[in-house]
Length: 595
Image (cartoon, rainbow, N blue to C red; front, side, top):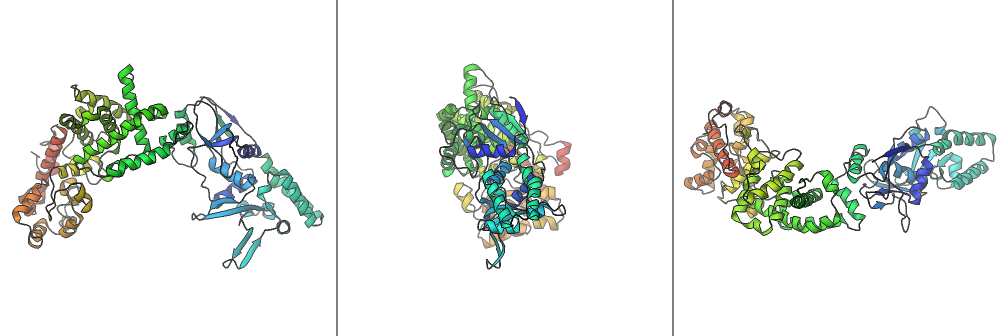
């Protein structure tokens, strides 16, 4: 990749946009600047203030992006562009529309209301050094009239050239229209009877303001044709002054569009299919899907030529359309199998997924295994790997390297090889239970799912949680020792708000519990909801809740026994012992060992 710098005249830049020589890559967002931004930009140009550099990319190189014309440019058919704009779209579009297009500008107010605006320069204010230049930029509706009192009063009327001449308001749309500017000057002179003071005033405006626009240079960086796709993506994100990150999906949408394939339409239809029966797959976006395709493609290349397995962003950006078309169906099926697998683990919706990123290697593994996925032994290994990733909290950072390890590791393990590195690396400290305070933690969501899988039954209805009851009863994680009771007894928040003191319950049950001590609300459930003590005890056991301690409001003993039981669930899921149950740190945190 190489680049050069330049300073083309603003007029030449806008002319190139009008001809279609300069266009936008299709991944660029739409134009969004409001009226105030446009006025401020025009004011800066009129004072020859710098407006920042723009960045161009030579079209037709190694990156075949689909181009599109700038807002306000209408050419049929659109020509092939010579350059594409990577940075500066908002500024260039604003300048083109207001200075060059000759049409009212479709913009918006600061509050977001759509408006049409035409811009003028108050010539007198422009020549008065005491005036704020932004105040000299006048924005009027496309009627050329500014009104008040619900349109009954006209505050400013610029609807005819004569009115513009008399009020000395110069239409900015004529700034680069040589013939139009000459006609306007002649009309102005005639309107004022060629009076010496009026002609001198016009000459000053031409020299001090109009000429600045003609001489204005736009600092530009021009990337050459050999710039690779991943470099375009990185450069765009680093320099784009709009502050909006360019996703891999958007960049690949533009790349595939150059081959007449609409990735956006393809993904919209695919996403509808994925989520029709699997709400959990709302966690999968277009970039996630592309990454999974790239991962599987890389693994299959690895099997043929022993190349490294990788699905980093640069790898995704090199994904060929032919490879995508070959593998996309298998990966879609892989995501559906992944959703079915974790649904059996009581993970039903997007908010309950511990790590959305872990779905990428899981979908890739399921896609590769195909029908083998349904074998019981295969599922057990998949689930053990999955829970090791969750409770080892191994998918919380940059994950692409782990994706590349896990897919071949797990497949080899299923075929009789050694344990995957994710299984070997996973560990869980007992004291971590106390810091699991909210859904922000993957292990918190994981424990909620394990409790439901363990057979958690609602305290009131006794209904076990399945797909229907989860949604119909608004199942969520609620306190067992209620918050109000804990706070009134001045218990430390880091203990009572931890996952150890929580259970999946229906929203109605949580409201019925209220803020009373467990002994009080359990008695109320038995009396008012006609639940026998023996049945209620069974419901409590299904949540791994120590019955005697809860009924006796013994918070400290409850915490130790429940924590020990939760560690048992984690051990069963991961197939690994939790070390440190009887360490000094654990005993200090829980008031005793968790054995």
